[in-house]
Image (cartoon, rainbow, N blue to C red; front, side, top):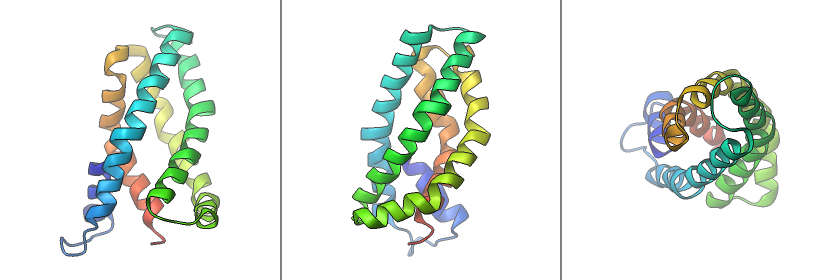
Length: 151
């Protein structure tokens, strides 16, 4: 997630090295390493245990569960944890979620189902988080930009 934030700051926001927010990148790196990756690893293990591996209906059930159950709830939790690590008040975090959640989840649904159907159909369980994190460089760039626009 740190790489996504760095690319957001340099490529999307056009910041110079002097304007670069190192703490922001460190925060995204820490969230990705100590929160997102472990949660995704457990989630993918649960999906595999519940629905099995393979193509077809198994992959479809995983994508449906991922996008209709996990993604909406995890996004809210992620935005809350991010706000806490940024030192924001609960009312501020609630406002950020109210302002940004709908846009983020709609973009999520336009991108991730296709990635996940490929991931769940063809990638062994032990590589699924790695595959997702490869695609997530672009997603995390968007997420970093979207969650830091008002700051």
